[in-house]
Length: 186
Ligand code: GDP
Image 1 (tube, rainbow, N blue to C red):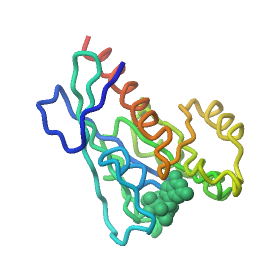
Image 2 (cartoon, rainbow, N blue to C red; image 1 turned 45 degrees about the vertical axis):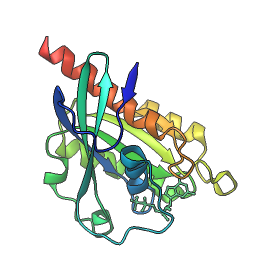
Image 3 (cartoon, helix red, strand yellow; image 1 turned 180 degrees about the horizontal axis):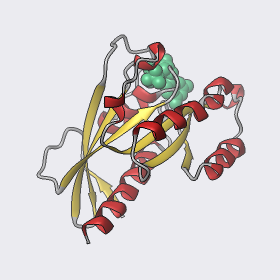
Image 4 (cartoon, rainbow, N blue to C red; image 1 turned 90 degrees about the vertical axis):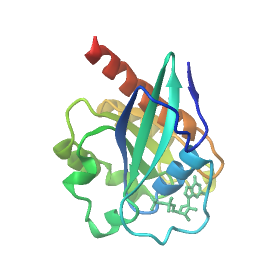
C-alpha cells in the first residue's frame, strides 16, 4: 500500500523519476498537479507560460521514490511542446475534460506524439477530469474506459476541484513505474 509524504518533502529518496502531464489546453493539468503536489486548486487559469514541474516523495513499501512531474504550463496552446519535454519520462498522465468532447477526440493525437517521443514501456494513465461538472458532461465514463482499454492505458475520472481520485490517478502511475523499475533492478 503506498502512502504519500507531504508536499515539497525532501527526504532522502531511493530514486527519482520523471513523468509528464499532457492533453489539450484548459483540461485541468496544472490544477491536477497542484492538487497532487501542494493540495491547492485555482479557479482562474494560470498566467505563466513555460515548462513547470513539481516534486513529491511517495513511500511504497520500503522504498521512497521522488516523482518529478512536468506540466506543459500553456505550451500546448502553441503546439510548442518539444521532444525535451518528453525525454526520459517513465510515466505520463494524459488528460481530457469530460465536458469538452474535442479534448477527448484529440487523445489520439496526444498518444501518437507521446509514443513518438517516449520509450515503449512508458506508463500512461488516462484521466477524464472535471467529473464534478456532471450537468455539462459530453463524454461518458464508458467512452473513457473503452478508449483506455483499446489503447492499453489505465483509466480514472477525476475532479481536481473537488479533489476526487487525483491522488489515486498519480499513485496508480507511480506504483506501476515502481513495479517496472524494481523488476528491472532484479
Ligand atoms: P490546463 O491548461 O490543462 O493546465 O488547465 P488548468 O489547470 O489551468 O484549468 C483550466 C480551468 O479549468 C481553470 O479555470 C480551472 O479552475 C478549471 N478546472 C480544472 N480542474 C477542474 C475540475 O476538476 N473541475 C472544475 N469544475 N473545473 C476545473
